[in-house]
View 1: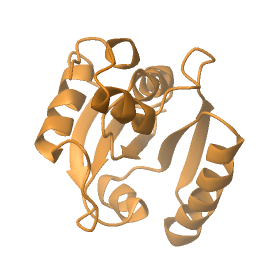
View 2: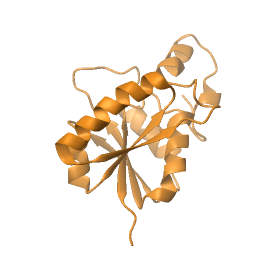
View 3: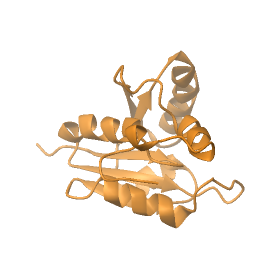
Length: 152
């Protein structure tokens, strides 16, 4: 029996060690994980899309099961186009759970896509792209919060 395909969507502004860890832990479950860089035309991130995509490619290089892509629109529609039956999401805390649960239910209602939630490892539960951006803006060392091989 072949393993299913998953999508791990996000803005990755920037990619963190927490994102990387979730993908690493989900890899044994799926034949392919599409790490999908969402393009929101109404929102400007701190880092340019090209830079974020390059960081994702660097973070997941040498992992043939991981495919880095860009997308616009609904994640559920992307899953349908890619033949992905699962969305992978990481949860750091109960706030993440509340927000992600609503999105997961909508993705299921739209396209029947299931969401697999993985809790962040304790050593990553405090790390978010928002916090890494704030540290970076204030000239702090963000290296410990980034995936192996990625530097800002």
